[in-house]
Image (cartoon, rainbow over the protein chains, first blue to last red):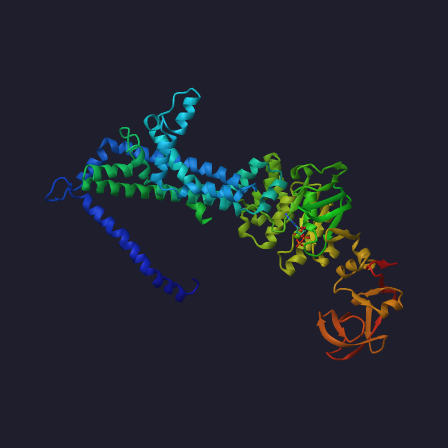
Length: 290
Length: 333
Ligand SMILES: Nc1ncnc2c1ncn2[C@@H]1O[C@H](COP(=O)(O)OP(=O)(O)OP(=O)(O)O)[C@@H](O)[C@H]1O
Ligand SMILES: [Mg+2]
């Protein structure tokens, strides 16, 4: 993309895709904005009068809204912490030459290809069920009271399930980044008297900073909209213990048939997501242009 | 102190023996150059001394103590890598200070030593830059700075100048030689450039396929190469080898004569046709064909000798500078 001619040619050729994407995003966005200002409930047939900020007001003052925001943050934060730290650990282990590396790598990556609903159901029925699940059986056979995962620690259980799905993603990105680290740098550090921990802290971690940024950014975007795992396991409960923002929007618009309220929630979610994105970019963006 | 002794050291990667058992003695304060063609095991030998590779058999003594099982950090050696291996996210200052920081040295002492190294290496103006903002020669100096602050027993250099352009290489060559004179520390220097070897070394170790062919001072190697390999490797342009009748006349299987030991003129025992002439200004190298000896035969003449392509030329070898070799390529005294 050096010359003026090639730049304008590039713009011209990319424009259909950009226009298509723009339409794809703009039409639903505008519709959502429009609906969010209407009193529009599918149970009340008839007029959909303009409602002003009413939908927003009721959505935000609903007690479950505060819970949903909290749950969303805990869910995103928890999964991010587990996947980044666990992914770092797994990547370092996988980077070492060992027997059967190829097969182990494929096995590590496999969870990412399992559909969220399927993985959540497998976890729910085969692992976390207090009677039939493996964890329950192990606890019983050792003489302990089995944990009722979705009853006692519902949000933590969902964090575990989602982390299981996303750990491979983090591992994969961090592993490739680790493999691009110049071995001579590590050897130089070794000659300079750095032990394993110093080599990790002063050489590997700075090298991985960019990859970690990418992992956090991409995962945050996807984790803000976690839905399937909640729907098939806890349905947002008990109470609102596992209701996140996405699930709350689903409840308003599809369980209470209040399209206006749901749209207002959607708009709030978009705004929040953008605030988080800007915040993240600011905080770690300097890693990206280094 | 920096005396290093290799005793029957060998190295294999899997089934491949890269270095058969060899002995080598490096004295304190010496500038030793390992030289040899690509893939002959120079880097491997250096890494064995550094401790970055384990020896397959044999032992390495540093200052009289067995260091074979000592980890690299504890050997008291500093290495400069071919790729420099600077830490990209640290400033020049932090790069140079890194080994001292790892040694948990006092902050004020670290600052003093870093400032000192930076001024010795002319890096003071760049001290807060990142390695990516430096030129090749400056990066090279940072790598050397990182090595000298530790005041190691010996420096190990693995082809440190091969990424630099020709002019800078000559400059850095001098700087490293000067550094050696000033610090008076043992240096082991790997290169495949025989000019670097000749100009810098106190002692040259010529390697071929992991085997030490000869050890000696640059002039020793130049005057009395032990075999044809060393004779051909040291000196530029290469020595001429002549087999057959001319060899028999001297009672040898083959004789060798360096281009600079053949005089050109309009009379002489050998005769040939001038091919390509390489004019360097001070010298001219003629490639001579149809001599019936070696093809082509290279001779050096002073820069202003005028022979042109296709001319007939007469050559006189200096008898006392003829090297004689037997069938196995070993020098006959
Ligand atoms: N880790 C390794 N595993 C297997 N073989 C290796 C390894 N490292 C080096 N070798 C082999 O050992 C031989 C010597 O390699 P080395 O790097 O010491 O050569 P060198 O003399 O430094 O060459 P150059 O001038 O090209 O740097 C080569 O044939 C190389 O293929
Ligand atoms: Mg090498």
